Length: 142
Image (cartoon, rainbow, N blue to C red; front, side, top):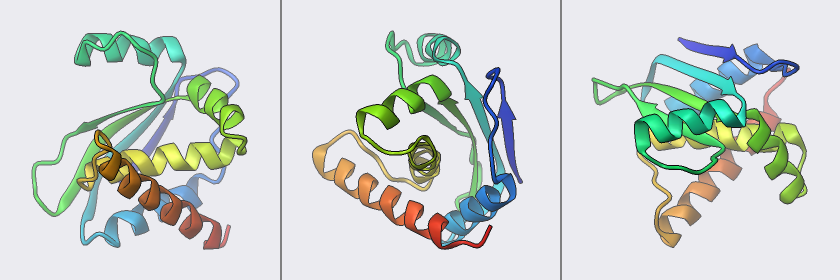
């Protein structure tokens, strides 16, 4: 089950059903099943608090992913996304807000699927996975 929780005033997540189908397809394409996957959309300040409290990182970030999976073939987790950071990154990278949001949403799932992004090589694989995921979303019917 995929849940979306919006905790940012003025932000509305569009095409929820399409996004759920897309994320489920992304997970299944890696041979895994969807358990409970929670997306929580927050402000910069709220995500910074989580970053400090749980990871001892005193920096703003666009996403934090907590893996709650207990079975090897089942993906479960909590994915916290800063809507403020996504908006700013969209401007920085000169892409639409929606495209950047899709990238970040895919990024969280790809982490749960085992992709990393700490080294340059890992980052390239992560970016390729994100691009492939966004392309898959764009091919889905609304």
